[in-house]
Length: 134
Image (tube, rainbow, N blue to C red; front, side, top):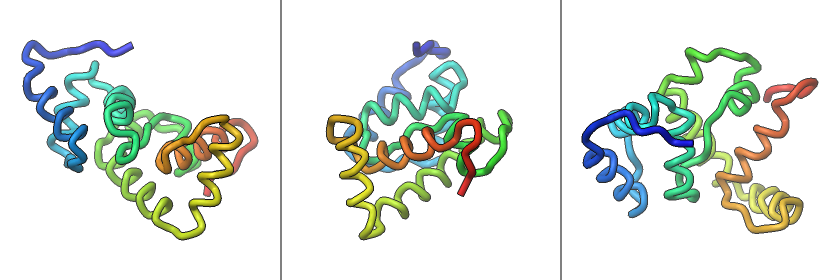
């Protein structure tokens, strides 16, 4: 559940509208969203994903663990790490072989998933006990 932590939502709404229009936000806008959504980068990433799932993947501790092999709350909360993850997802989804992976995941999920959602699901599902990071 989102909990808003600011008195003036206008800047966050403006950022949400930019995201909806397909603009890529940078660190200052992302930090504003984090401050607005209960000081949670995870919550901010979920909101951005729901607004524009084609450009913003969900970020959480299991994805972080998959990428790094570590559990580190401090690093999970760093906006630069999310932006690096966003770049990684972009690189992965632009690989010509990725369409096959996305199609397979969509079939398993029972609905068409966006490319970023497919990447995030693989990382999330492969991050549990006994799994190995890339």
